[in-house]
Image (tube, rainbow, N blue to C red; front, side, top):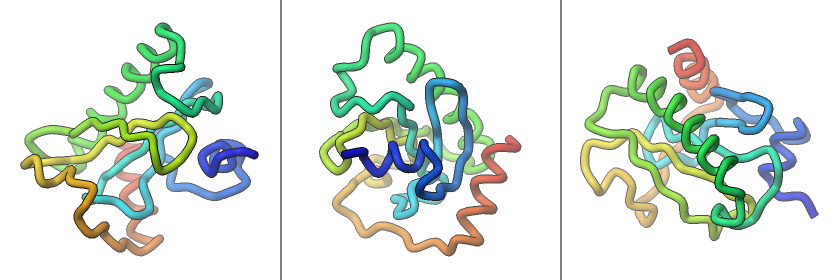
Length: 129
């Protein structure tokens, strides 16, 4: 069975896309820790990030860097936090989260509720950065 991320990649489920190339897709997390929280996924469904071959994993981080630089332009912060947890969806993904302190990337905290209109605006701002 396809993961929710594969369904997003295939266009079966809509997303707030911020970047895409032939191999990767970056889109807003709809229950983010911070505004500008983006997920980067490989288009080939792989459950565990360290099962991705070295070359593609390197390309995934280079793609993530490009997205992170755009996020930082829209959401000024000390850093863009990078985390890989990989337990919630069986499809490798990287979280990119604007942060000013370590607590900004604490996944135990309550997630934000952001309207679809605002998510759409945020995605557009990041795409255009």
